Each structure stands twice: as C-alpha cells, then as structure tokens.
Image (cartoon, rainbow, N blue to C red; front, side):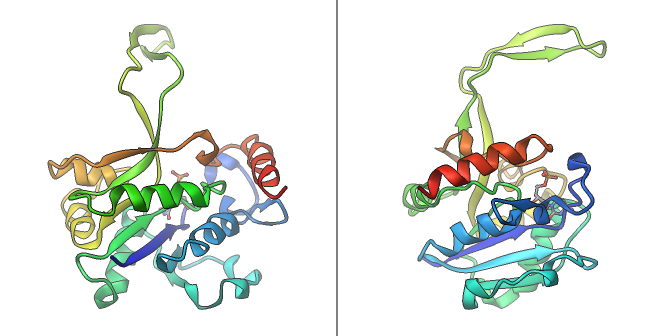
Length: 228
Ligand code: C5P
C-alpha cells in the first residue's frame, strides 16, 4: 500500500473574520496549517504530503517550511470549492498516483490532528474495499428548527456521527467520485453518492475544525497539552 496526503488550504476562512486566511493565523508559535502538516509528515507510511494553496496565495512563501524536508509538495491549484481544490490536486498529481494508491484528504484547519488517529485510520482501512474517514459519535441532543428558530423536531442522535478528516480513499475511486459528484462538502459524500458506504473510524473532539475566533484558544490548549 502507498499513501499520499492532500491538504486543501485554498479557502478564505471568512468565518474567522481575520486579516489573513485562517491557515496562516498564528497558533502555538506556528502558522495554523503547520501543525497538521507536521502530524502527517510524522507518519512514516505517508510518502508525500501535498498542500494545495490558491494561485493568489501570498502567505505561503513568507514562512519557512524547510523542516519538512522533501516530504512536502506545494501546488497552487485552489478551486472555487474544497472538492474542486482536491480534484485539481488529483489532476496535477497525474501519473504520480496509481489508481490503487490511498489518498488521505485532510483539512488544513484541523490543526490538532493526532498522529495516533492517523495510524488507527491506516490500520482500520488497510484492506477495506471502500475506504473511510475519522468521525465522532454525536453527543448532544439534536434539534431541527423552522425558519423562525423554533424547534420543529428532536432528531435522534442514535447512529449519528460528525464527519472529520482525514478521509481516506483509493485514488481511482476518489477521482471517479469527485468527477461524477462534484457538489459535495466532503470526499465521503462523493463516494456515498456513487452508492458505496465509507467506514466510520472513531476519533475524538480534539480533531475539531478551527472555524471561529474562539476556536484558536482551545486548539492552542490541546497542542500545548501534548508537548508535555
Ligand atoms: O471552509 P472550511 O473550513 O469548510 O474549509 C475546509 C478546508 O478546505 C480548509 O482547509 C480550506 O482551506 C479548504 N478549502 C479549499 N478550497 C476552497 C475552500 C476550502 O482548499 N475553495
């Protein structure tokens, strides 16, 4: 098995309301995206980590990435949506990828990804016919609202999961799924739309997506707690 990681980092991070894209906000002394790249590069099975930034990105070159040696590849191939960014990267990698190679797609914004969870994902899916993703069972009671913000219905949380990343599929399947079903918010969604059932691999809440300003302090706490 060969493993490649793709890290889409071409979003604008508008919900953060910051002066720079959120992947470059300072977090525990590094640009936010650094942390996920460090974790993926620390997994020996992962042959190459491919970061996908937007063509206009001015921030990447302002930082020093030399600590990642030759493991990191940068593509200026951002698309209008996350799925398009991933599709562009797969296209640019072309013949470097064999159809049976595994591709792990990971959000740059999930800065607290733990190496342990990547290893569990690789182990669990090594012989899987479909692939799968890290995810967490929903703990809160779920409510569906009407347009006025009043509860319409309580939705059972049984069997409900929050999808995380990395999402891991074989390159051939992922390319076909994203070509056929481009309007998805994650890779698993495209694979599901092709009639397949990705495997949910339990992770935990530390692998959350840094989205709002208040998320930065929590991410920093988690990262610091690991360095002791
Ligand atoms: O916006 P959201 O937090 O869902 O983005 C998830 C990930 O996808 C982020 O790492 C973001 O940079 C990336 N993305 C991208 N290209 C886009 C939109 C988002 O690479 N057009």
